Length: 297
Image (cartoon, rainbow, N blue to C red; front, side, top):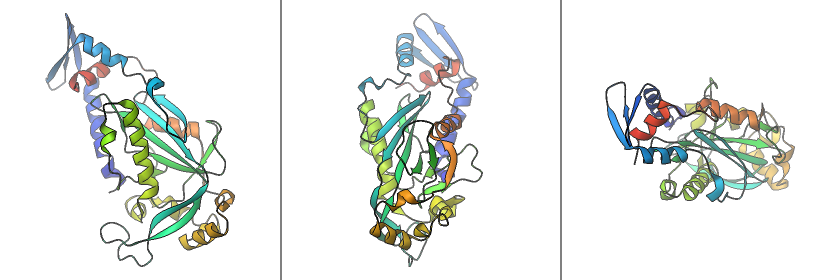
């Protein structure tokens, strides 16, 4: 599954967003009515609408942040959880050199043990048509040779097969986590916000680190960041060299000059907000009201 296919649902949400922006809202007595440009209408009791509006703000009071979440960034309708893992060896299922196909059905894998530096994963949640937070399809991953201490810290591209380079990069993730093998867990649909967000992060972490690594990104997108990073250091030029270096020194990855993004965590986050048309502390508009009324549960 390529990035374009994964993002089809997101494009449909944007189409609906444009339709909401053209809707008209009529309030009479205790009922609010939204009418689309096509003439479709829906009604909602005014008290319920006001309650929904109050729920649009991200309140972390009831959220227990998982281990590794360094910070939470929020610009409606986008929420980013910045998760960091310490340098360590990982066991991956890596595409075998003798695999009959480079990805997909019939691909053959072998276990490898590779040391990674600090791993930074940006889990991007968006408010869906149902008015609830959901894990998006545009999550990103980066490397660092030191722990995050602030939004001004710069990020490096991740030398992983399942992290894609986009061409052109405008309007798209810089280091997209391929979610072909992401299987939403039942908890991701929980009515409890704490459960839903934590489950989304864990499912994304599992998809990134515990599913098969193959050449899909090199086929469907511009390249994988593993392919792009093979010349930065002889110790990561091949997966065999990486395995050998990891066995000799589990922390060698902290010495590798990984490819620089040239952007800080704050700048990458702002880029994500822009890609999702987030507007910060935006005013309530007719589009906001129409979205809630048409998608009430």
